[in-house]
Image 1 (spheres, helix red, strand yellow):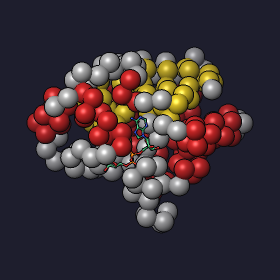
Image 2 (cartoon, protein in one colour; image 1 turned 180 degrees about the vertical axis):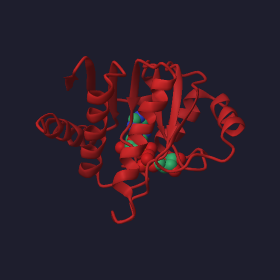
Image 3 (tube, helix red, strand yellow; image 1 turned 180 degrees about the horizontal axis):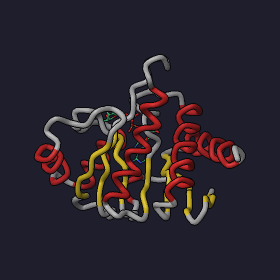
Length: 181
Ligand code: AR6
């Protein structure tokens, strides 16, 4: 599924984030930047040890929830990896919504600072961090669409969704976001 927002392209695909040859790919990291499973495990396994070496050297203090930092991509086809930290779902009363929106926004800002024209996101927080999928998809697409309307870049944002259930939730959320105005 594809949409255009001004001159920008917004795409939804099913697939594996580590195979994307976009300028940036986004990692669903934890605040210690310590590595883990899911997207994080796949990126470090696929990219090799240079990514963790760089994170340790440049960000020994980690990365707060809702923020993002950048490293190289080791052996991966993308030019750089943006590590962002989505919130752990704790029932919705702990700033989860604004922290998830912030993770998407800060990733886009960091991509802009790196002159990235294209970026691929996974579905942040909806795996190990257990954010309810439909709500997370609405926040993800609303936040990205708002950013694109406001800034007119990057040229292309691709959501790389791992399974059909996640893809369907994002497709519904994209339709809802496009009908907002
Ligand atoms: N490509 C695209 N999507 C993927 C991939 C992949 N290779 N692998 C999994 N997904 P998660 P979170 C999907 O758990 O919820 C780690 O341990 C997955 O099916 O990766 O933000 C970190 O170190 C789900 O839909 O991220 C943190 O501690 C989505 O990506 C913690 O997990 C996100 O799942 C972060 O948890």
